[in-house]
Amino acid sequence: MMSQKNKCTALPGLALAWALACHVPASHAERADRDQPVHLEAAQVSIDDASQISTFTGNVQLIQGTMTIRGDKIVVRQDKDGLRRGTATGQPASFRQKREGFDEYMEGYGERIEYDSVNATVNLFGQAHIKRGHDEVRGEHISYNSRTEIFQAQGTPDQGRGSTGKGRVRAIIQPKGDPVPATPVDKNPPIQPATPPTPPENEP
Image 1: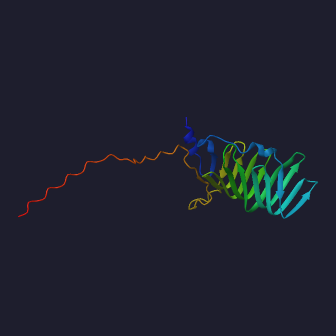
Image 2 (image 1 turned 90 degrees about the horizontal axis):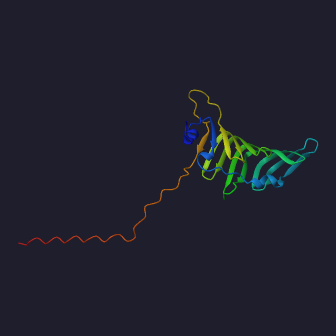
Image 3 (image 1 turned 90 degrees about the vertical axis):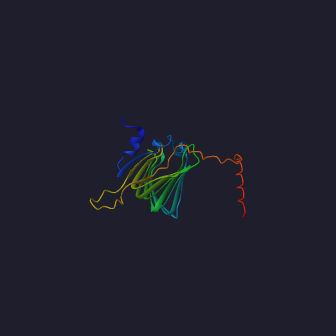
């Protein structure tokens, strides 16, 4: 049976399932965010009450608890329960959310970001990039579940022989083991005996 480590490293480069639990204990985005009101700011807004679709344009910012989504344009679909889905576009659009129990944030960027509040998922498309601490993943499409903190990343299909690999998923995952302690410097080294002087040679 494959070890947990092998399961993490044997994933194909074109479709990378980045479950960071392979490297650190699983943690979750702030659970309280989904219970917070949604605040939106934009230069212009268009609201269609019949279809329950609102379009915000011009340096748009969506905030819900610790989560922030920014873009040139955000389209929000809602129902009687509030925000359901939001799509942000920009060059790039950005996503940021605090990790529960940690003093750090998850950050993501893409040409298009789709947020689904019902399923607690974020999908980033087009030069997508997600970063958590010093770990990061890049690809053409990254899906992130904020409840489980599991990523699915995909690159563009290979173009055959001679392909440069430009569309492949790329990840940087830092080692999570305890750092090796540095060798202490002895401030009081033992006294070494002095080298006896060389007797002078007999002069003629």
